[in-house]
Length: 119
Image (tube, rainbow, N blue to C red):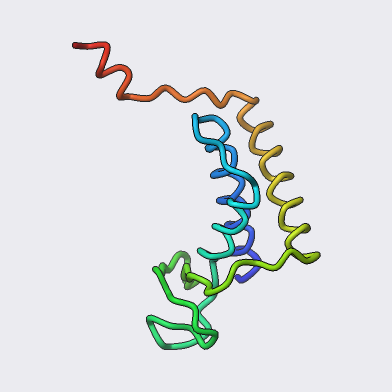
């Protein structure tokens, strides 16, 4: 289950990275990786509902198909080591896959523009 949750975190990071590029406020990939690290998907290691054994704070939890998962807030930012560079490559690779699935159509119609046109 931990691998599936880690993959969900990478997919979420890639979606956010792509979403920021398609809007007026792009973010650096380092910012997205920091965010993905701080708000990480994790399996519940302890019974304490608010804090893990490493001092990270539990933000939320859910159960799907019998598997429990939680989102925790890590205390520190990731180090710029081999695992960081591997994660960066994974996020970029998943972003490219998402773009291919979307057929590079990332145009978003915002409903507030339609509402403004009605006036």
